[in-house]
Length: 217
Image 1 (cartoon, rainbow, N blue to C red):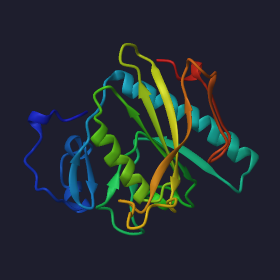
Image 2 (spheres, helix red, strand yellow):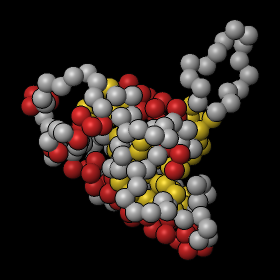
Image 3 (cartoon, rainbow, N blue to C red):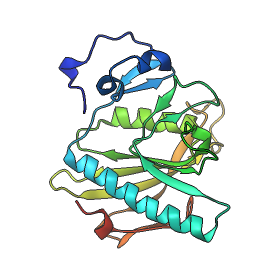
Image 4 (cartoon, rainbow, N blue to C red):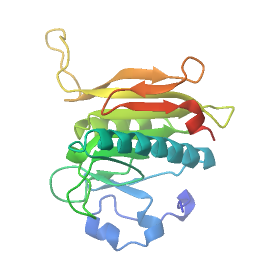
């Protein structure tokens, strides 16, 4: 359950994972830690939750098929699962709406950014461009190869578009004296809408083929 803004407890600007574990579950579930800084996560409307579930289910199906065909490349897809940045520590993490990651060798392990092949966010009309870009930059800095944006329609309970972005770690040629603001960035590598395609098809990180009917509200 999301914690309304007015009911959010007065917390320090920075917390550790250990501090977070001492908070009530209904509070901690609405917090991400960005290098220890408290970032409140807003839960979207029913459409947000429904499309997040539908996209995750479709990715699970594709991941299972890819694993059957190439067992040495075992994949899993899940929703709203913490992704921890860095090789150790837990005070720097985000919780994408959905993700694809390599199968882990033992149960109940933390998922590190290095294990993740794809993260995605379902964007409701209330999402601001500033929030979107901040999240995208964090995922890119974490070295996650693929980032998806599922944008919802403003006037209907439907998906307006799906965009797939691939990580670029070596910027192109720039004018002398100009340097990129970030060491890594995402470039759009695919875009699909119900009006111009039968579904989403892309061969990375494995063969993904999702029909729009599979994603309906």
